Image (cartoon, rainbow, N blue to C red; front, side):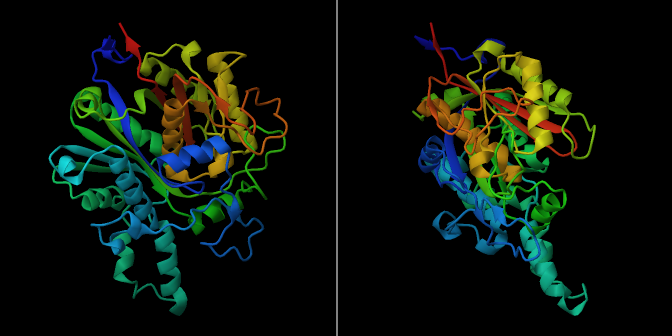
Length: 416
């Protein structure tokens, strides 16, 4: 038998996932995260990192008991803030999970691509408030200016891993940024421009984002209920997810474990409305992803939906899925029911979940589900995971401004 993955026949290098790093509200590390997904754990809890005095809603999906020094060994901790710590810790985990050493990475050309929504806005807000006490902006702490650049999220990873030949890119396409970053990594490995890619996303709990969604009336009073008739909104979350991508040849040569193949991706930006999702825009991104991956619609095992739990988003996304797949689409799950909405980390954490579900043979559930909204005619795998032979998964993500990114992952196929 010879390995002949779906992308090989298209004249492109086959790209596989060989390492997974996760910092999330429901678990840390690939193994614990997979267990949490299968069990349907919830990360919803009272918000502690932001003063919620005066806010009607007070829940979020925070990362608990995170100790940066456990994972960060070479980078000074004050080089970046909490979001950067998430990115570096997830990258360190992913590299170790892939069985790569710092020395091996240092000898290769590596892409680092990290997506984010807020960068280090948590630190920005904290430091500004400290300085505004005397009504002046003249004496801002120099640390503030050093933390303004979101680019620190990717350069921090390079610094931690002591890479000598790296391209460090930070994608700021908001809630779709994780998928954007992984898609870029796919292109770079496919083309042979890099040997290894560390791709994902990271964001920390941020007063600015919490206040914005609260002001929009989008925060749920308790838990997230994607596709449910009684859904009431999102919970802001935080965390970091990083995947190690490399060519199949590289993975086989070093005997690496392969979680999944990255088959393709699709992007669309309709810019129809600042916040309201476009059904047509989402559908277009899905069609482009299927075409890029060379996947037929009946081959998709399940869809990891963006599924924020808001009335407008879930209805538009479910409608787009029906537009593409017809009246009987693949099972469609909402991981934010467990994780909350971790902004730029959201689709990276979802991509990690997709790869783990392919590797471990299960479909994660949509928890907190009671009654499916007729406007969302999908099987959301309510409340209990399903054991399944997962062959291909579609990972949806959308952001304000009509920014959509859809990623396709699949099991590596053995064909004669």
